[in-house]
Image 1 (cartoon, rainbow, N blue to C red):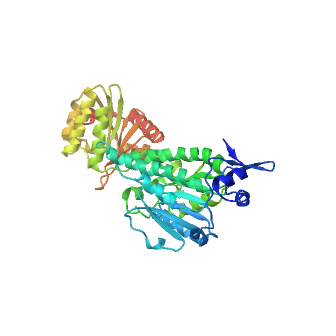
Image 2: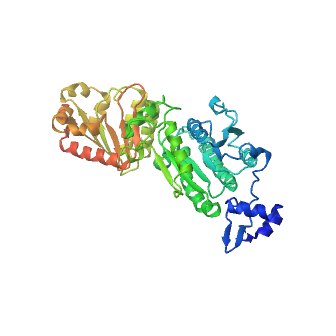
Image 3: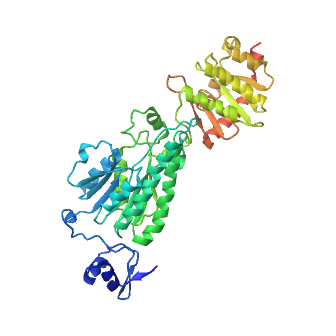
Length: 461
């Protein structure tokens, strides 16, 4: 890297040497360092912003924080904290979105941008003519996907906001920062778990994890700026009524959703404290990532669940093993068209060479009732599907601990997937999990049931 002397910088920037010395002593020229009595100023460093401009006079005693995504619930909570602590905020918000009245404050300057348009972002940054103490990126783009009818445009839009906009704003705003400054990028736990319903969002969050580490490597050395991330879990407020959010509580050790102000507080601490923390991610999820029952879809309605079932059965190759527990639920083994198609996919799979074993679990006294079911008769007539029976009352008496694993039944596929039934409550039919621990527990349960099983034919004579 080439360096300038104070005299050379004075001539290049058209400001006095005395002014440059003052800037150097206040750490306002990024990357500059002293060798003996001589200052070395990086040649490609931009001319420092002059705080003596008219615009800056009004806020010269306040440190500036730029917040991208200020109109979000977390953004509004962060703004309250920053204002209380005496900061001045430059807030970026997506055009055409409605601004909350609580953001209309003399110490908040709002800038409308289009996160899908690079030039509007560059223009917004150019309009910032003062030193920036901190930058927070929390804007998100989230859309649920249909895996069987994928929208590639939506996928690209997600990256435009979640990754490309974050990348651009960090790289441009960091030029206005100094050794006291800090950058915080808000992320999601889906960066670590993946998603069945929002692959674009989840993979974009994973990309941001690497960006944070890369920015820390590059810009801490270049400008002295710290770059970290706050990884948020399931946060209530915006989608509190969403059923999947409420059901997520069962997978959180704290047994509740997070609050926006809690994430905002973590952002503030990472932004202004933790002076030796750099390139790191603070996970704020109530313990969600530490739970065993993860890597699963949201609870799916009948339509989505049967479509996924059909795809798994169609894609399973010859030689694969399916190990199935059937509990004779009310929402299966009926004449529903989706159920008929699913049953047929069972026989299509075994005809392709899939090994299938199904254990039926119900009260022995109901054998004559189930014997009349057309689907059960097909299973009894098949010589390619191994079917056996276990009396559920026997399990209740001898092995009640297994009931928590069996629940309403499931379909295991080798050791990589478990398609889990849910009780018929009018909203959900099941979910899919690839969590290794959950699959392992189910497989061990299946092996234990097999030891107590008898032929299905033997009880339906």
